[in-house]
Image 1: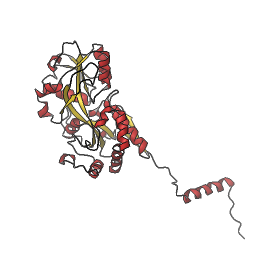
Image 2: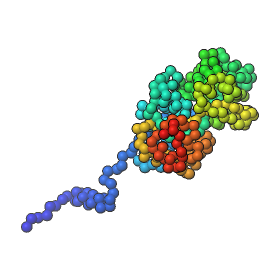
Image 3: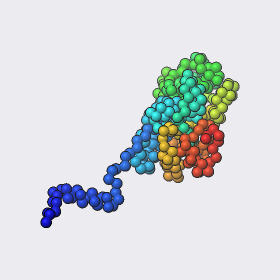
Image 4: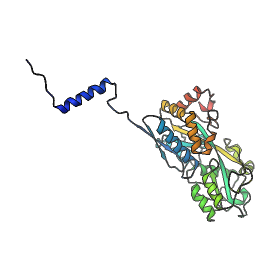
Length: 332
């Protein structure tokens, strides 16, 4: 009679555990974690708060997904990173996305076709501040002055150039390509004469400048109305920064605003995009985003497609259509 095969005790235990695992239906291989990158903005800017918030929200709530937040110069760099797959998500101004799609960015005729809008996040108004007592009371007074416009490659710098070019002043000012926090400190130290901040309000860097010094916010909209901005860049809209938003600024400021959009590369799957949107635009997701930044109170289901004049990602088209939104021809 053939003797049964005898296995060492350790092997018997391993085989037993394997049989139990298979019988229970448990996976033998752990699901692979998908790692994505979210390109945000400079330190102290609203972009960075939003990108970090959304990255955190997605990583916590979508199984096997890890979204890391990347520092960035801002909108234009995010457009390029997402388009080239160096990042998967980003925040890009509606104007930059529109101009980039049509090859009309400043000194850049590349057509960025791989970056797609997901949703509107908030309106980003221009703040143009000078020190009280500087003698500068209007935009024309900046001719020959040092104006911090944001880092090179940022949406802030691009919008500043468009604005000053529309008034014939870009070649007359002395642009300084530095970030918001550095600009606020430089204004207080009299190293620059004016600071351009293109971000949702209240902005931390403007608060920093207004807390340390007496500042004046210039009326940007009135100046823009005298130039060619409306004809050349119709996606800019009029916004009022209410009196009392910043220390010592007890008057309304009328300015121009662009929409900050959440974008993704076409290479990101439709199912993941739909899941990401459903996560962020759930009641809990919006509550979390509102805790991240006051500007996020503009994020609602009804406002989600505001200012988008370029095609949506396929997953976003599906999600927003299911939410009852009607897509414009430009968004399809």
